[in-house]
Image 1 (spheres, rainbow, N blue to C red):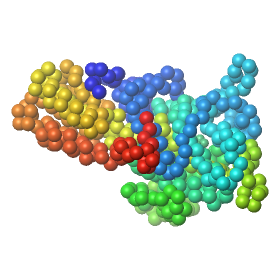
Image 2 (image 1 turned 60 degrees about the vertical axis):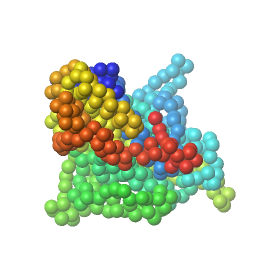
Image 3 (image 1 turned 30 degrees about the horizontal axis):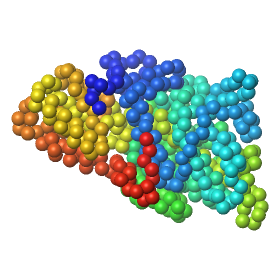
Image 4 (image 1 turned 180 degrees about the vertical axis):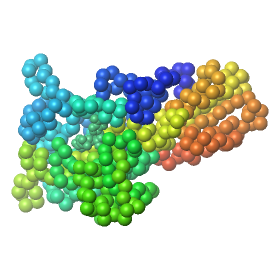
Length: 465
Ligand code: 5CA
């Protein structure tokens, strides 16, 4: 993309309505525009990041064996009357009446609807286990929408639902989700710590929230600092293996880590004092096991091997896709702007032409642009007739992890400059070498591109979007 042809409405001034850094930077970098309290348009740069996060979520869900689908945003009220949650949900639910006077609502979550789909089409244990998910806009009429996309009223969420014959199978689904969530967040450059939490209006006993530690987080958390040393990393986990998934779950939840709702002062005080931490965190996901709560209420039963009709065991699992855009910025920025992790960056590399209009510099930029695009990567070429300082400031603000600076002086020596946004370090090297470096940097993040070259039957997952 060439900047002169793009739509990147960056703001010079700090917007006064933004209280936290991610909201401020998203507005300044031209990523979002507020349309009403807690309701945003996603401008092109923000939309790209949202889509990248969504793609990672899809890839990791499909890798774990979960099946994508799409349910509507508007739901009929009667499903919620059946489950008993129509009244219980309270004023957070946006209630709508259609022209036939039928009660509808803008879905805050989809337990009822998925249970309705399940009971209409599944009647035998032979069709289990089954995990269906979708990524769809939700609406919760929050009392205090704030912090931009972090607590919106309209927000984008991945929600998944598992159906199992037994509690044991459903707990495997719970552990499998925990593992796949860890991998999902790590690919986005985030450490999200599973913490024992409260199940709220979803219900059930077993639930963990995934928290990214950040001073601006809305949740108060208590944890043993040793949990921050654990990473999934490159481990290969077989999602069908009950033992492997359980082992990871136990490893990640053995140490004390809880939100304030489930905090236990006595257990906390048993941790060595230097490891006892009280901090704030951003909730980027939550997993639930709630047994037969919805299947009992809505008659989601299957026939088991003995010919008996039994209610299915269920759980639900959510990832705050739009909230993650803000959470990643909270975790990764400096005074000059955003620093995107490679896994989610809207463009892979910026190209800054120090002397627009200089025939040699222009030609070198064009050549770099084509070579980077040839790798399947997307460069953003700042081809404006602006001074270098302004171009650097824009690149720093929008946070592309790598920048190639091209100028007549370097070209005389056959070199360009490759700069890391994170460290600020630059190195001079021939343009072909800079392109090679980018290819190596992004190789681990683009396994899905290799996958696309495989015949359909050999692909481990489809590539989305
Ligand atoms: N049905 C369950 C699991 S699918 C559910 O709704 N869980 S939830 O309430 O915890 O929401 C899932 C995730 O959505 C949260 O962890 C959070 O990251 C995100 N989320 C919830 N409310 C908002 C909001 N108002 N704005 C942005 N993201 C939100």
